[in-house]
Image 1 (tube, rainbow, N blue to C red):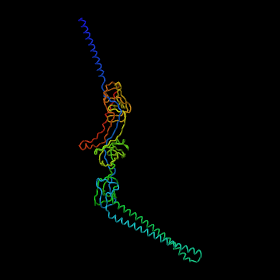
Image 2: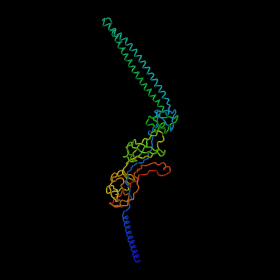
Image 3: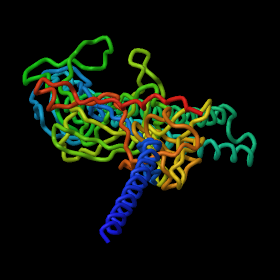
Length: 441
């Protein structure tokens, strides 16, 4: 009995030993398989948006700036405005005193009055000449008829005298009418001279040519002001006016980005000095790249009816150069060069690597648009692609990556806070995409 129990115990122990060895061998096989599949960081292709924007610093300028000169020279009688005053078109800014012009206006008025009198006198002369002509012409006709009815009754000398008087009276009428025409012409010349002198007199009242703000005043009461009609004259203006209800925001666009600028393009404008943001529209550009700066001046009209923005202020702008929506995007780290083609290392459902050629669209700093070669949800290896080969099984490690991106290219920005604290301005260029690696086969 004891021998049987001992034999059974030995058999059981042998069985457990065999099972243990088998288990140990099975576990080693699993670990060997796991060790044979290298880990790979992967990202899923997603649908998203990519925008490429250019950030630029611009400066506000008045829509128009006018130096207001008087037409005539004279002494400043009084000036009605000072710097900072808001004026409207036609408003009187200053009044000059020109004594000699008053005398010229009076003389011109007397000339006009005298011309009126000459016209009246010429009209009376015409009336007198016409009356004389009518009487003499009637007498000449009667004598002619009587001589024809009874020949020899009236002497020929008398007939000749009557006809001569008739013709002389007719000539007197023509002369009176010519004198009237001359008087009328003289009146026209005198009236024109009066209007000219009166216009000069009116110029002594200097008015605003536009709605704007007085940004500088150059003259005071009593000063002798020179007329601004002589181009060689270095006379100072009375005031300088700035039309500021509409401002020009001038932006220097770099040469490489000129091709993206079009009339009507929208851009975001941020005025940090007053904490205001707005949307502007490109209304004009020079179509000329400066030889010195290699930039093209571009303008945006900004409504400033409340005058909160002062000319000379800086603004930071964002101009959208390119944009795509609802496209397939992948990280740029997933892109490699396969010969002359761009490619990605994609995984199938069995986690095996397959090298696929893809066609790319818009690229940002971290994402790229895939126009063909991938579908949403496809997994691609990001980084270290040279370690993997076609149809190799890998252990994927899915990474969380964004689906959309706004890539910013800086053409220069103004950071007022940074400048006031002595820090560098906030002008960050777009990070370049990492260099693409040659694909392994």
